[in-house]
Image (cartoon, rainbow, N blue to C red; front, top):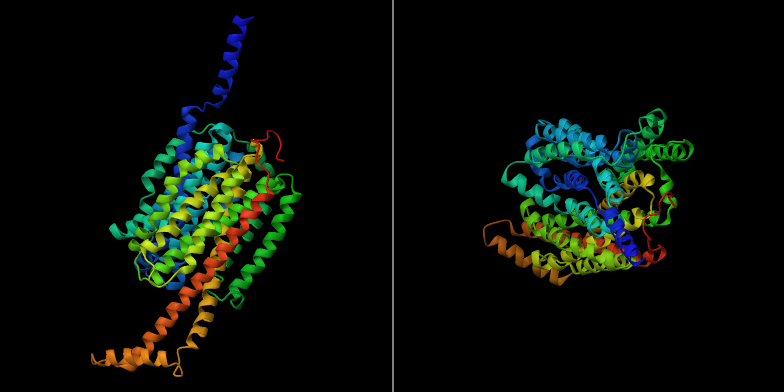
Length: 529
């Protein structure tokens, strides 16, 4: 009996090891997919630090150049939730390889653009096709890797999803300075070809279901495109156009409401909706999506605020901004393996609380901001931001997608990624609006003290005027202009501080929200609940 028991025990121990083994072919395919996702997310922000160079190169107006980024975002936000349904119909292999090939071709076209209209069209194509790559990676991670490998895989996709938009301005700044703005797009071509070839030949984790094409909800697709596209447009352009005082924003808002009503009605009525919203019935997925939305605010909001401060207050160019912000990316990169180890030892809720707490601490330290803050003053807040983002993202991914059944994951990963992008869009809209309104308010309050009845202000003004007059210039006129500039600068800084206070409050609140979710017990098979 002892002799037969020993081989049996050995077989039992070998079984889990065999089950946990992932074929090399699939691992290589997954790495290729991750790199494709990295390119797609990087391209959202890669142009942000180099818009002035593109504007000069294409002879575009100041109001037109923002569309280089907006057109990409609008197109991408439509494709991301759609990708789950497309992956079911044509298979992940066909969707991903065609997305990679289309993204590469659109990148080449963007580099050849000779006017702003061409650039906007090529960027929209790039965003729409590239958006198909992002959710596929999240779905693949939870489909082909067993739970025992999640502590390695989750940090990897979490790192790419957060690192790519963070280092986008840095990479863009270097490329446009060292070469020209064309290289922001040309840099995608060789990696894009490699990703296309590898994914076409190696992805084999699912089969197409062409029969679903007959049941495809075209009205659902059109209404979703109108809803999400108009929403992204309203959020991106609202502040620049003074919100509802502009007729295009009003029309866009009406389109959002009409599109949303039709989309949600179709989503719950038709047997095969373009996006399956039932994943939100899973409590952990719903809370994970809320956290992802909020992380989008923090991720894209700070990627916007730091360069804006450095450009507007410190007068940095794109290369100097990129060098200063490199610290956040470095902190994320170094934290990724630590976050992976923590995820296999710690309750994900504890990790999330640590991450949200660290993020709140980083934004709170920014409330001491002055016009003299430079690389060293921004060092600790940036490290806290990078480390906290990684510690948050890994458990958020696991909590949101880790308890869904395989048949729900492809669709749910699209919804999950959409929440992060929408969080970024909503966050930027709110941040821009608050910055505009609060800086005007602070300017009015500060200018009340800079008037002839204030001896200190008069003394400072006379001193500046005398200094300029001594050099043969119109001292009083220049002194007034300088004084107004100083008040404007301080008003900007105070409005930045207001934003950081709000972000601190938001992330501090999330610490308590974590207590509402259940600890994931591993993937539930066969049920979405």
